Length: 536
Image 1 (tube, rainbow, N blue to C red):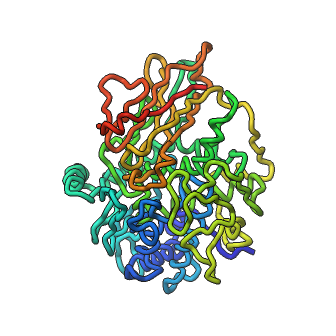
Image 2: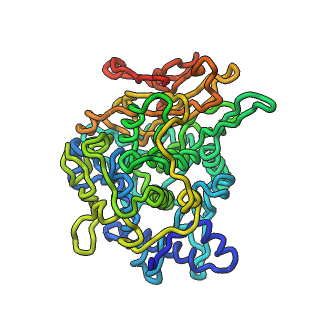
Image 3: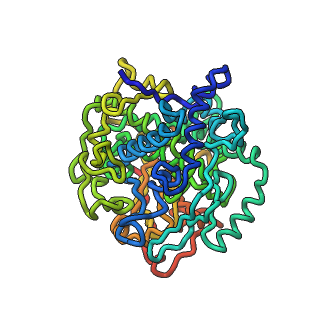
């Protein structure tokens, strides 16, 4: 019998509003407790939030041979490492007096309430009544109790933060690492002085990412084609095996070798990346009916970068949903007992995507026995993926009701590989080495004489990839964006335009429209090929 259930935070809100206040109050009390601990306490939020990226430590401190943070992205350990991470946070929460039975709720990102209204109010309200006092909402932000500094040699301190810095979300900017950053962020944030108004913009941005679509045709022939992140969440449950489900690197290899016309694989890491940028902010191009994505140009919230994302409390409610989707995929595909990794496949080596994490040897193959540093079991040995396969029998927790439960019901049909979307826009060879920070790859199709946004792939990346020596052999990002049925003319694919949009503007792009901005490149960077675009 499973003793702990991770419920939707919307469920806790509803109970609270009906008079059953204890579950939500316990969550708030636990979060306040770990945030109030001194920064050298191993259960403090400062310590736990720092495991993901900055402050770099151990082998990752000042060593360009390592990524720096402990997190695994772009490889097969992405789902299991973050599963262990949530357990570590829950252990700290339960150590707070009066919180021994607390569990971390999930933000149900595809619930009707989120799709229509955005982020649950418990994650955004400014204050909360707890134990007879009105306190700052512990889930809204985190104020650093120590400075964080990226010590990687040659790395500009774009995401260094001083003591007393408070994390921010879209539409604000949190870049304060250099005098120029501070000046720009102050000027940008001065445009958004009203917190409640900003929450409205944030929620509208979330809704736009989750619900974007375009319309093709007119009258009785009009069709609405989804181009949104909610569809990616649904599609990731159809990935045929754990290796390609788990990460973007493996999925890119799989998609690049699919026969023309077969349905692409959507890895769980893809919609995960989208929601990071939806909360943190990014300038996503949009056409008619595509949604008002990230209209606050210059927004640089903490969730938009690996280095500091885990210092925003919403990170954990987001990742709890990621873990729940991981569990739903396992149930749908009969993988609750074992997880199998395709040996020596892209995404199974420590240098893939981000470079090796501290404690892991460079150029080592990843397996279900690989240690998930820095997380340890009660006996002191490192967690491995094998220890985390079945959340109910091994970890004593499960998930409450939420979106996509019907996808794993006993009578739900298991999606099979085979013909799907007729064509895809395959974008390859995007050079991460010349891009500062996270970026997006977007595709547009000419529809009724207008370019309309048909899909975006988000890429979470370092601010200075060239500061990581091992990253240099894995600098390419890619995307496979579907050209859905109604967009395909009888004669073939419509005219396609691809943009790679960075924090500094557009990379020189395929079919760039007149007047498009572009990143200023050094002569060495300018000599590198930009990227490849293929429709097939």
